[in-house]
Every structure is written in C-alpha cells, then in structure tokens.
Image 1 (cartoon, rainbow, N blue to C red):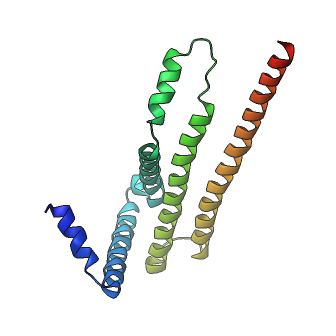
Image 2 (cartoon, rainbow, N blue to C red; image 1 turned 45 degrees about the vertical axis):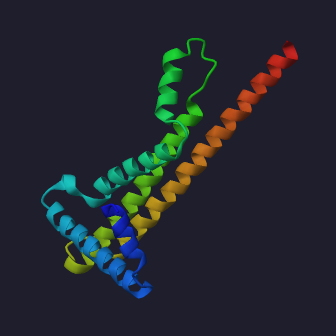
Length: 174
C-alpha cells in the first residue's frame, strides 16, 4: 500500500467531529499565517495579499481549467494560429474561456486577500480606512467576477450571432 492510499484510508476512519476539528484548526493556522504575511507586507509592498493571492489562485484556476479539458486549450489555440492562413478558424471563444478561468480565480483570490486584510485590521487597527471598507472590497472583487462573466457572454453572443448572420448571407448569395 502506498503512502497516499494509507493516508486516505486513515482519513476515512476518522469520525466527522474529528474531521471538523482538523479542518477548523488547519483553516485557523492558514488564516493566522496569512495575517502574519500581511504584517510583513506592511514593509514589503510586493507581498500585498490581494495581489499575490489573485495571481496564485488565477494560475491555479487556469491549471484546473486546462486539466478538465479533453485537449489542452493552449495547444489548440497555438495550432490554429500556426496553421490557419486563410482565417477560417477562430480562437476568440477559446480565449474568452481562458480569460474567464483566470479572472474567476483572480477575483476569488483577491476577495480572500481582502478578507485577510480585514482580519489583520481587526487585530492591529493600523489603517486609515474603517473596518467595514474591506468588506466592500470583498464584495466588489466578487461582483467583478460576475461582471467579467456577463461581459464575456455578451461579447460571445454577439460574436456568434454575427458569425451565423455571415453564414446566412453567404448561403443566400451562393
């Protein structure tokens, strides 16, 4: 039996109360570590939690998106760009899905980073902003994900409608 199998079988034997305690303690340790990083980031601006959490979660979401696809979407895009000289294949919709995957992860990461900022400000009270202002930042980051989705869907619907209209006109003339 491998180490991964033994760990998963050991975790299945733990009762629900113990699993909840393990999850709660792990989440608390993670949150305190992030608050500690926030404390360090007051002197190092490149460690600002919303920024680096947005980048990390954006890349993780993009990786998960590529893993779920049957074929790597980047390979398909590069193949189309490399081989399509008459511009009869389009990569726009594929690029939209990649943009949305990264934007969704970045929005969730930024929201979590602002949550870390809020927790840090509750402990230290060093900001000139009121505490509830960080909650508005969280809400705005989550609403930006929704806005990105709506904009990309509107553009893709317009794109598909014009493509169908072009095909209709080509059939009508031909």
